[in-house]
Length: 226
Figure 1: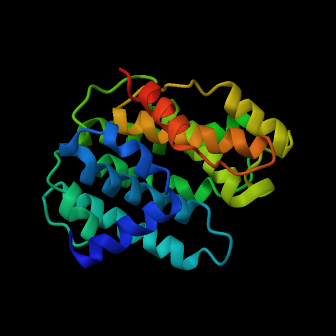
Figure 2: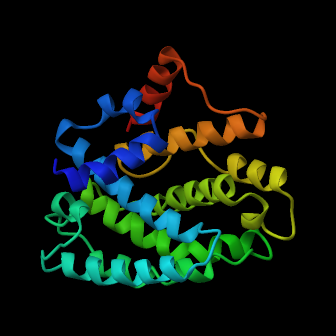
Figure 3: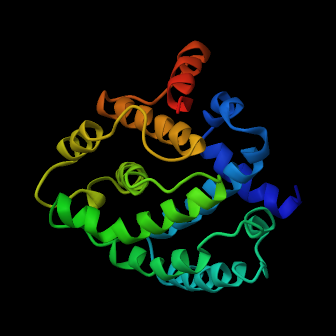
């Protein structure tokens, strides 16, 4: 990997150190692609969850829209594109969904609005992700992406990301209640989702996820099963 690529991948790995336990279950041919893809999605999560002046993030989002459209013609400028751009995926569709992240920063009125705000983006992510990992697109894959985004959003923004009709604990309980132990989608997504779900469970118990190697092995094996 180049130093530029390393900086983005290492930033994501620093946020998800648990990935080191589970990536052995990812096809070796997809391991670099997985961390590059999830690092890209983290860039979008950061833009969505910005808590200060959004102007620089909005400009960055517009740049990403142009960049993703260029990937369709295999003309990447960003280091992550060196890994992801060769994949024939609906990059333009993902680019078109990016502006919805700006509107989704507003606190939703209720759970239905919280989901509706990000539904289009989640669907685009699921479509691209299926191509990235060479698996069929499953109808429930977008739901897996959306659940994880909403859970991570609460962890980043707290009450500002909670529907106004409920409170933080109830909203997280709702998310956990509808989140299966093994979700639809690619194996990397199932593993990533399992880690995010474990973090949510720990948060609801008032602590942080601190996995033991044995527990992570069992969790990873379960999530990796088709």
